[in-house]
Image 1: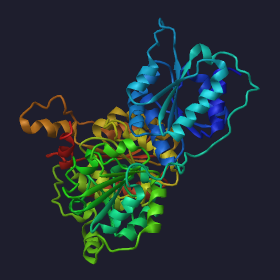
Image 2: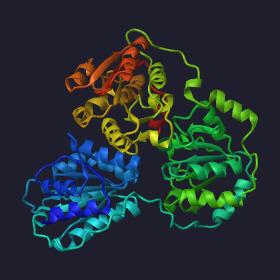
Image 3: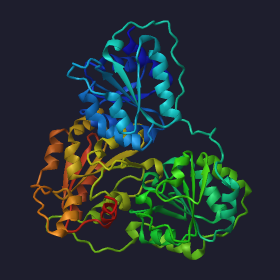
Length: 547
């Protein structure tokens, strides 16, 4: 056995189940060793796609993601996806060959690259530490929820490994850190219990760190009389509750924005309350008390500073608080319940349909798709001017139905995100929502969708432009020739890759989607929607305030 094989087998023994990558000479042996250890390997067509697939897989499966890349350009190709994962604190291990000889064409400072984007650099520096370093990379990814770059120098990879060395035992899924301290800072849970007992209009906003805690949060909210909302990444967490306001922030309905803004107590559960979630702080009323419950105390003063910080696992803290809280009405009234039923979703908000001239209003398109697609779906969203339409008008069954890789705000990640999410949740229909710019950036992975056999629906909102820039700069009279493009027949491109495809320019064209859904679904489907684009999305105008 050589070191590369030992590293792959060690990670398989730790509990890795699925890995993604693009194989070159520098990661050939470690990838084959993963496969030999029983790990499912998914070959992507670009390292950037592989990294994003692994990120999405980890988010939606609860298991560590692994991506395997070649030294030098293999790693730099993956860098945008790795940055997204690092910013999102995704438990992810990057296996990268490393050329340590300075004269090598492949030589770059790979550890510095990892540090620059917020990942944790590690290296297997000698044969004797191969297994221990692999196990440590796994531990850091799991326990610290970090993206780890494990550099594998080429000469060390090729060195003999003592095959009698013991491999680590499997640990399986990424655990919820139940051993985290219950509280930190002045007051802690007792002070939060007091605030909940006194608040007249409490609102809970749950984020990524609360996706495992629906039961505990709903129980506590019921006793405190709190309304329920989420950040975008936790969309669907409270679906089905009569007190669910859906997403807080740029995607919030007018009703959600009104009720959150009027809250006298806002409790953020595993949610940093960044500018997107709070519309640059405007959703936090001037008299509201802000509490954050988080494993990381650094979150307490980030973005909107907390009046009180409680350190601990969201589920554990919520459960402990519920046991000591006397039930009260709080923000919950018959009138609020009636308004949530009548106004609580974007499709309940009237709008003027702008379809016509060979283009469909993206709101009409999305509502039509929402009506057609099975409820058991997993929706992955790319970035861009279009992104609010599927995020706001397309429903999901729960927090496991929405995958939102937007921490770095890169376009082009949506299709790969959908692939990783689909492989994590094969029980659901995968839906990728892309703009035309992002679709063309990630188009190499259409072949991956077909080869892997995913029954995916890929919706492209095509306005023949980088719509964000058109609507940001156009009103000021700037020339837009650099951000507008001639028509592209994306349906024909999809058919060339082996997909079924339908072009949608008006609501009646959605009959083609219905026909695919009623058929064998033996090929993925692209819905090439030519959408109206006369004006920008108002949520994008909010976003640009942060640029």
